[in-house]
Length: 217
Ligand code: E4P
Image (cartoon, rainbow, N blue to C red; front, side, top):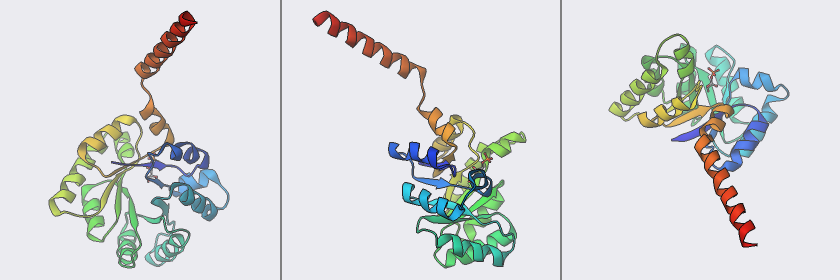
């Protein structure tokens, strides 16, 4: 399963990329707004660091505007994936952008029917938001299983990009279900590293070694 960072923050990206486990980045208008500054320069820098698919979202809500913004965004760097919201306009824009060879991430997916429609118009990625579904007492991960099953039934090439991830259990469940990608906030990726028994075990190994070295001297 591929691991993306859901962030527009350069510091977070610079810390995690050297670990060699990051396959791409997702941003959204809220995440980029938090960073401020020139969003085009920021996206370019992120692409240079990650050298992998980097989603940048349109903010237009009509088809012509989405196409204009999408074509402009993809011009920033070869790694840019144009993100469009799941609306009728987004679906239409996805069809056109995909036919031009642009990779499209259809975002704000909250149902299996939306995922089916996105696959039919050639989306490269579908982004179901699991955490926001959990927030309204609906299982986000059940939606992932539905989409994985449906795409498998028809051999759709669209990749399931699990979004709105809130904790490492979402990641484990997504991997068990065979989702293609999990995009996680940096804090979730940091949490995936942690186990108290690893820390305790390492501390003991080092202490024992130090003790033995002292005795030998
Ligand atoms: C996905 O691409 C979105 O940027 C993101 O996962 C949304 O997550 P949130 O629900 O934590 O805002």
